[in-house]
Image (cartoon, rainbow, N blue to C red):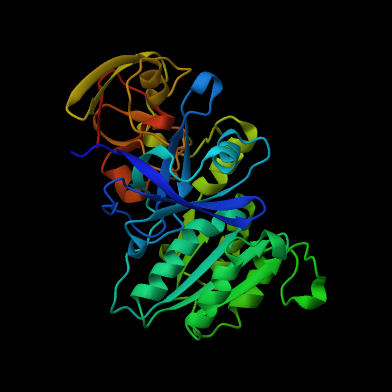
Length: 369
């Protein structure tokens, strides 16, 4: 099995807005890095106290078609340790340690497809949507894309110039609808003002007959409130749940940055499996050909216990959203505080996320990778 860790060179930095920039990477040997549109890259940066390494997941704003380059777009978070380090310190020529691209919020292009893709995002939620948008336009000549993008004002639009250029290049196949909550040039200058909420989204979607609700595929990324509003609008339009994909870790990563602490999710995880109690138990982890046995206390997740012992397991968001730490539970039972990162099929197959996992029995064995 290949290592999940890579060293990449910073080859270009593009300023997108006053508080957001795109950082472009390549492998030193300029070989392509396997990825799917919409996935994310985990950056491992020595910016903590005393040079302690911090990890943050950032969505790829590049597509596989741009290989050997990969790019992430970083928005400054007030007081955020990692975003400020990246925007103020990282320079072209620097090398950064990363985890290879991961994530289920992705789309596989199909050159023969003729489909309708609706992307709904706000703020830095545009990053994975941009990756999907560019890939579909380039790889699927018969598909159509609608982007509904919410921002505070015109100046805060990430990729504004690039979106205008793409609209011209793919006229008739790409439509972009901007929604401004506090437009600089006044409401009269724009079609959609106010928050990107259920009412605004319904108004936009009901006018787009080439994006039929029952057939179109929907990708949502942005703050939780926006995604809940969008989901509500799509339900009213009768969109099948299977056609809706959402990415939560972007918002979680920003919350984590702003709070300088991990959010504690409490998902409703299959309570039928939770017949044990969360007490101190031993856990066995199989990873990269090694077996690790260690104790996990009720105050720790399985990942936290491993990291305390300097066992270098893969992880990124530590919020149960990104799947970087996913493993298969071969025996025993595990309680998950949060399960949004896992599909129902993965849950049935016994997959768990060790960053939000607690052993419920004394025979827990988890295989990672």
